[in-house]
Image 1 (cartoon, each protein chain N blue to C red):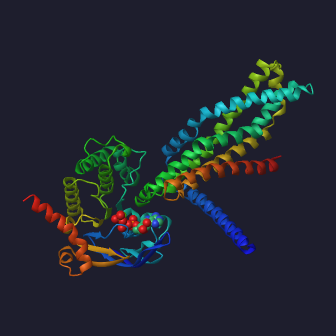
Image 2 (cartoon, rainbow over the protein chains, first blue to last red):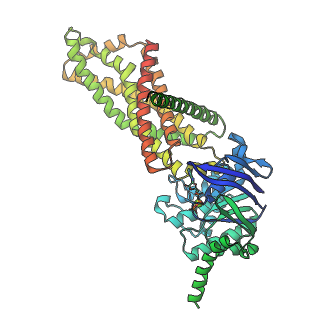
Image 3 (cartoon, rainbow over the protein chains, first blue to last red):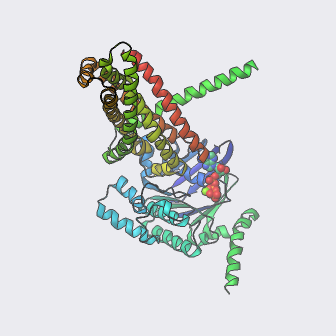
Length: 252
Length: 257
Ligand SMILES: Nc1ncnc2c1ncn2[C@@H]1O[C@H](COP(=O)(O)OP(=O)(O)OP(=O)(O)O)[C@@H](O)[C@H]1O
Ligand SMILES: [Mg+2]
């Protein structure tokens, strides 16, 4: 379980997080929503110790990750995998080598196993036969999927994914959502996802939390979240709903 | 007015002290991570290829012309005393003691150092360094320490090449072109160059190698998150490395003499 207690963070003179209290349930898929620039990516990075809170604590299963340094922090991170918003692929390596990287460097698997697992993941994210390309030769959406493959290939205990479907067409977005759900079912990892895909996320997430003005404005199981009466939240989540409705109407 | 100036002076001094502290910590942490397993010989070889092999052409070129111009200048000065026979020792001593280490290190800074800063800086901006962190792979260990080691090994080797090519360049101009006696060119080198000179040159080149990869990696690692930040980092890396090389060179020379 990941727990944030009163996390405050100021970046570039601008308060971004102003007392975030959040508990991510073990083994569940939790989605964080919120407006652009609200601090969702910053929040995610606090969970893996890339940012240290100015005030407050970040706990991961009884260790305060916000206090760890050096090798201890390194060890704590072994249970995580993360997809960055910008994919953060190593641009000196091919797609295949990018996905293989954590397997080789972290697990030291033999090459035959590496090839099998990487090939499997690339198929799952729809990048079959793209392994030899370099990140610079990929489209934004393909980079995203390669990054997701790199995060999933580790079969981590905790998965942090920042906007896995941004920049993807609706069909591919659905494929990726299905993949995340299937992986989640199989491995039962704790997943935290940042996403703008309203209303799709309500169908796939166990919990939904909304970040607003540097605080968690609401957190509830996905079904209850949709029944909220808070006008501000309603406004935010219903815009997506309206678009979906319009689609449905147009398609008859 | 005066207080404002004093304030600014104080702030600059504090910033510089802080920067020096950070640089030192960066170096110590990198060395500490390097001593932990796993050792990545392949990464070190790759960096050696980049810093060493890929700089060899420009180093050979500069060395040849430096040696040749030394041959010309040396001949011109020495002839005034009728001491052309000592041309070999003049060329060799200036090469081995001074020009080899300094010029080779400056060329490596310009070619490989700036590229290192840019490479690491881009990795910082595009969160590739953070990605390494999230994979529980320490970036200082994986990314920086191989470059540091490659600098320590590569620059001395390049300096050795520089010295040899430079001395031969002096030979070409002095002996083949200006007619100094070949035997006296080589024998004056043999009698004038002592082991002490060679050791000094090696010591210089090792420390220059450290300075190049240390400063250039540091500047890249702490690049500010913008394209402008990357440009600034690269410029600062080259300027600071070059200045440090020259200052440290003076210091070492005065101690070694
Ligand atoms: N490394 C950084 N240095 C300085 N400021 C930062 C840094 N990272 C983020 N910020 C600032 O923090 C705020 C929140 O950024 P963040 O990337 O978390 O937003 P977000 O909610 O993920 O938005 P989006 O949905 O567009 O991805 C922004 O104002 C941003 O400028
Ligand atoms: Mg974001």
